[in-house]
Image (tube, rainbow, N blue to C red; front, top):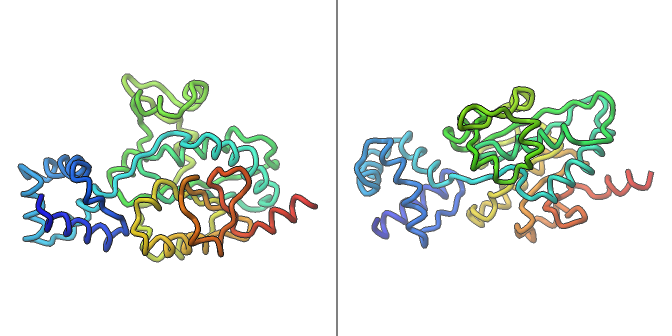
Length: 278
């Protein structure tokens, strides 16, 4: 790939999805585009990019952008974060949502491990109010990732990454060389292909939004826009879950970290303080 090719890919990634293409890592770009080139019938990445320049076909552009944005996720990524959600956040919300479901959105769900993890955590949570209901949503830019997420089928390698053996036995069924998430968990989740740069207002209210593995790979000038759009969907006592290592200095006016350094942020910490004092 030429420098001009790299510049083209970087421009497409930023314009279409807000992603920062790491042009300083050509090997990473090649590893993501090589399978796409083969699927599309090109004998090389150079041929794929040449076709991209020649046709400017929207379908091919999005296929390239999706490949460049491909995220990686594991079950229960960040044990402390999921423990805090299970033991503190979900029970507290259940006491305040007696008449309505708790709505949870994994906003960059990739192949589904994260949203299934939070659904399992809800099953495992104690001290929930009687009749607590949950609604889980998973969205991603990649259609191929969403297809895998909806199928709920994972290899032995994938379930070994972060999933305790007790939960594997309890929530999965072995099918030859793969593990299938149990129907009672899979049927709790609804899926949608979504670009986080789009207008998100029609998504409705969510009590918990997870945006993990995203901000560090996003163009710096667009991070604030995406975070602000997501925070606008949270009620006063809602939480946004980021990676614990994410730099949130630009969002301190709209978010406050929950105790523990787990990447959980409160839209209005006074709500939690008032509840604790009551």
